[in-house]
Image (cartoon, rainbow, N blue to C red; front, side, top):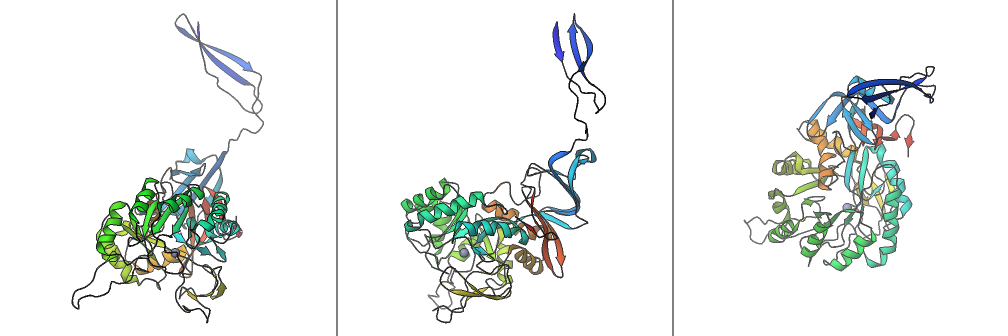
Amino acid sequence: MEKDTRTVFLSSSVRPVYRLSLFRCAGTLRLQVSEKKRRLPKKTTITMKNALLIENAQVLRPGHWVRPGSILVKEGKISEIDPKRDQVECVFDRVDAKGALLTPGLVDLHSHAIQLFFYETDPQQICDAAAVLPRYGTTCVLPTLYTIMNRSSLGHLERLSEAVCRATGAAMPGFHLEGPFLALPGAGADTVPGDVVLLEELLATLGGRVSAMSISPDTPNIIPVIERLREEGIAVFITHTHASVEETQLAIDAGARHATHFYDVFPVPEEIEPGARPVGAVETILADPRCSVDFICDGVHVHPMAIRAALAAKGWKGVVAITDANIGAGLGEGVYETPLGYAIQVSPSDAARIADKNHPHCGTLSGSSLTMDRAIDNLLNWLDLPPHQVWAMGTTNPATVAQLADKGDMRVGADADLVLWEQEGRQLQAKTTWVAGKCVFDAESEICV
Ligand SMILES: [Zn+2]
């Protein structure tokens, strides 16, 4: 006799539990019912743990559509879009969006600070920054380091790297190293010739937590650095450069695929022969379909017309919004001390500028005061594109550039990094923000992890 036992619980809190066993006897299936000792717990309602339903939202899938719908989240991932009723009956945690816009969280590839927290300073500031970013709709950031990529800072870098792992709030999948292999200093960045040995030391110290490195094609010995970064799967960005056409092409051929704060610190090449227009890195990057570009979308660093020009060359999939934020971003107008030895005057309408009267570069730009929510707001106002394509520039596009497969999208299987927005006057404001399905900011209760 073969035994083909399937246990079925015919249950409630008051009735006994029965075991139904199927026996195959001489080719005939027989059913045996026996009472089982165990009883179910008194409460028989089954709730779906770790499940969240956001319903009645205006759901936006970047680059695809925006439409009324609901999103089911399980185990930190988007589990269903517009789930059926039987899929959500047991969901305990429900949010009625009341028709508000629901998008993937914003992804910032290039940011040095938020509020008074500067990523390079110390591990605690990394943790503090991760906690406040969700109030600006940012759910993923590459903390950008630019003055400490040297051998004397290796111990400090190791401590920063550990902080990225334990920070809660916005996700920090890895650093963006802005240098040290740059040709032009910009606002304080190191300029060091390409050095694979130093690169190896930096990568080893940061324990693989590097998502992107910015280089200049005109830095001596840069090609082996680019090739090594590509072997490690690290995105290579071009910046701080006055490279020639040929130097830029070589860098792209070696694996550079993106240009950061494009146009800014990309000086116009000198006119050699009157009447002959000089060309360089900007034209080469615009012309090469392998390269995407990003912009500080504050209206100060780049004129909106320049962004339109890049869109005409790249299409909406090839353009990304960043902040390049400095101390004071997200705060009101004022003068703020930085850990770089000078104060900056911050104004939402006029970026961040060196404020110290005795500083040789007093009044010059020093990063931005931008947050990602304002960057998207600006692009929505400046560009004549469908909103789902504009939102892609702060979500799916940066995630693609940084090879973050599960970030920045509204599809089944993507990380449930989501933002519910409200319109405050003419400005979008995050109402509720989730990272991996966990609420990390709520405007009403002022929750901030
Ligand atoms: Zn920067």
